[in-house]
Amino acid sequence: MTTGLVDNWYPPSKENYDFVISLWKWYPAFCSLQWVLSWHGMGKTSVDSRLNIPGRIGWLTMEVPGFLSLLYTMTTLPAQLGIDSLPWQNKVLGGLFVIHYTYRAVLFPLMQPSISPMHVVIWGSAFTFQVINGSLIGAYLSGYGPSTPAQWDAQLAPFSTAQFVAGIALFYIGLVGNYYHDEELREIRRREQARQDRIAREKGGSAKRIEKHYEIPQAGFFKIMLFPHYFMEWIEWLGFWVAAGWSCTPARCFLVNEVSAMLPRAVRGKQWYVEKFGKEKIEKKWAAIPGVW
Image (tube, rainbow, N blue to C red; front, side, top):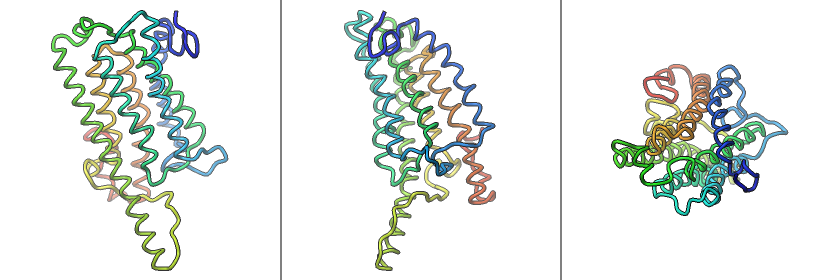
């Protein structure tokens, strides 16, 4: 029996945790609709709508609940399960989750030169994903997964330290790569804004803040694919899964669900680039998985 903001659900009881996990495994089936539906009301494909939410506000409020749910669960559930202190592995993995979302949920929208409005349907689906995902991973790290050093040794056997370190290394490689490629996209808009400001000064006026400006990025893995920031984020969560152990169902679901949700957008995004810049400039680039897609 657990108590909390929503009894037995937030944080979840073990029975409800198992139930949600059993449904969460089917999330890719929901994401598969993106292969047949072209509409996606945010980013490059956002459109004017009375149901749009301003980009920065939408991004912050849909992403922040992920790491807040994890933190809430990890600070309330262990005591309810009679756990006095979690092993350092649980705390490190929880910290990695918070590190990622401190950037992705808070710093990213504040650093962006501009963010297109997003439709309330996109906001709602992302908000729901974050609450469920953060709660499940938080519950696993709070006692429904390994909660003693001996259990961690068994979870990552036979090379527990090596596997954990390898997973952490993969996570940080993905995190740095994700930030690097995001920064290249930001720099494109910064350069365009500087160009518009310069022209405005020459004409004695002031330039409007840019809302949408696109080029074909060329730095880093952009040389061979169009969405390397997606790819590097998947590397992050692959590393998280490696460090958490192959039997960590929430970590596996997170990676699979992210790929399922983001790959269709990358493939459609490549089509968008082809239509905007021409096939001859795009056709030799992969969408998001080098050598595969």
